[in-house]
Length: 188
Image 1 (cartoon, rainbow, N blue to C red):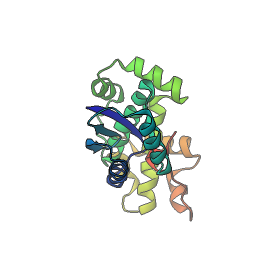
Image 2 (image 1 turned 45 degrees about the horizontal axis):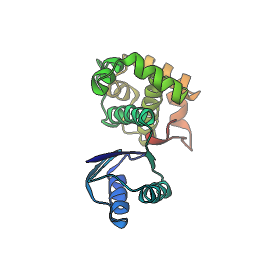
Image 3 (image 1 turned 90 degrees about the horizontal axis):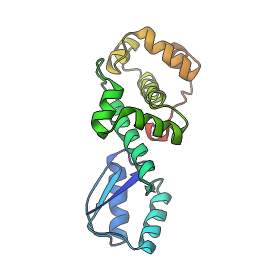
């Protein structure tokens, strides 16, 4: 079994798209999950290049370097946490990643910063702020509910991070006609 890492897979449609490419190229596979495809055997170089090219045409990227794969794995785990729509207030980023990745957090942090040019903490904050923007755009939740769902200790803490990250307060953002947002998979 060969595990391939694929960047930018963030939803069930992404899985469907990758399965279609695998089928189109007659590549035997066992299963496909977000960010991963499990092949029944290794790919010939020519097939791997074709597979990679077809994935890129769909907005995906085949990850081959182990360090890049590790960074993408960290990002996927953090996207899953934020996409779950509720981050417990007791959530500890360092402990979560150390346990999930089965590696020392300081080593992960150093690798992430050196390859991404941003700390893991800042990346996680950016993910949460984009989630806040999403919820504010829908108008279904008030700021207190948003703060609670994303594990902030207070509305003030959330507001301060929102302003520092986006340059405006949540109230100013809510009043915008065009609300600029990024999808979670497009952050850095």
